[in-house]
Image (spheres, rainbow, N blue to C red):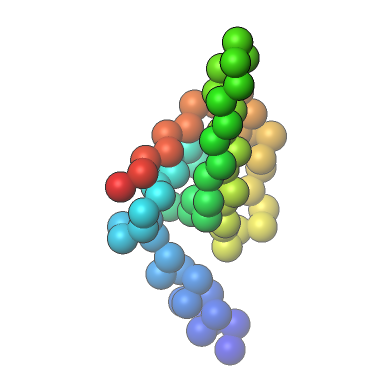
Length: 73
Protein backbone atom coordinates (compact mmCIF):
# COMPACT_ATOMS: atom_id res chain seq x y z
CA UNK A 1 0.00 0.00 0.00
CA UNK A 2 2.80 2.43 0.85
CA UNK A 3 4.27 1.87 -2.61
CA UNK A 4 0.97 3.00 -4.16
CA UNK A 5 0.98 6.19 -2.09
CA UNK A 6 4.62 6.90 -3.01
CA UNK A 7 3.85 6.30 -6.67
CA UNK A 8 0.92 8.73 -6.49
CA UNK A 9 2.97 11.51 -4.90
CA UNK A 10 5.98 10.78 -7.07
CA UNK A 11 4.01 11.86 -10.15
CA UNK A 12 3.63 15.48 -9.04
CA UNK A 13 5.74 17.75 -11.22
CA UNK A 14 5.58 21.37 -12.25
CA UNK A 15 5.19 20.51 -15.93
CA UNK A 16 1.53 21.58 -16.25
CA UNK A 17 1.19 23.98 -13.32
CA UNK A 18 0.38 27.69 -13.42
CA UNK A 19 3.08 28.45 -10.82
CA UNK A 20 6.58 27.00 -11.09
CA UNK A 21 9.08 27.27 -8.24
CA UNK A 22 12.78 26.57 -8.74
CA UNK A 23 15.14 26.53 -5.76
CA UNK A 24 18.63 25.12 -5.15
CA UNK A 25 16.83 21.87 -4.24
CA UNK A 26 15.71 21.45 -7.86
CA UNK A 27 12.66 22.26 -9.95
CA UNK A 28 10.27 19.57 -8.66
CA UNK A 29 11.27 19.30 -5.00
CA UNK A 30 8.87 22.06 -3.91
CA UNK A 31 5.59 22.74 -5.72
CA UNK A 32 4.24 26.28 -5.40
CA UNK A 33 0.67 26.18 -4.09
CA UNK A 34 -0.03 29.92 -3.98
CA UNK A 35 1.73 33.28 -3.94
CA UNK A 36 0.76 36.54 -2.28
CA UNK A 37 2.39 39.83 -3.18
CA UNK A 38 2.22 43.19 -1.41
CA UNK A 39 3.59 46.59 -2.31
CA UNK A 40 4.02 49.34 0.24
CA UNK A 41 5.05 52.93 -0.30
CA UNK A 42 8.78 53.47 0.30
CA UNK A 43 9.24 49.84 1.38
CA UNK A 44 9.27 47.81 -1.84
CA UNK A 45 7.63 44.47 -2.51
CA UNK A 46 7.04 41.42 -0.33
CA UNK A 47 6.09 38.03 -1.78
CA UNK A 48 4.98 35.06 0.31
CA UNK A 49 4.98 31.66 -1.38
CA UNK A 50 3.25 28.58 0.02
CA UNK A 51 4.84 25.40 -1.27
CA UNK A 52 4.12 21.68 -1.00
CA UNK A 53 6.45 18.69 -0.96
CA UNK A 54 6.09 14.98 -0.38
CA UNK A 55 9.57 14.97 1.26
CA UNK A 56 9.15 15.83 4.95
CA UNK A 57 12.91 15.81 5.52
CA UNK A 58 13.77 18.87 3.43
CA UNK A 59 16.28 21.11 5.20
CA UNK A 60 14.48 24.45 4.98
CA UNK A 61 17.39 26.24 6.68
CA UNK A 62 19.52 25.42 3.65
CA UNK A 63 17.17 27.59 1.56
CA UNK A 64 17.51 30.73 3.70
CA UNK A 65 19.29 33.45 1.76
CA UNK A 66 19.35 31.37 -1.42
CA UNK A 67 17.87 32.54 -4.74
CA UNK A 68 14.51 31.19 -5.86
CA UNK A 69 12.68 31.61 -9.15
CA UNK A 70 8.88 31.79 -9.24
CA UNK A 71 7.31 31.69 -12.69
CA UNK A 72 3.68 32.52 -13.44
CA UNK A 73 2.70 30.88 -16.72
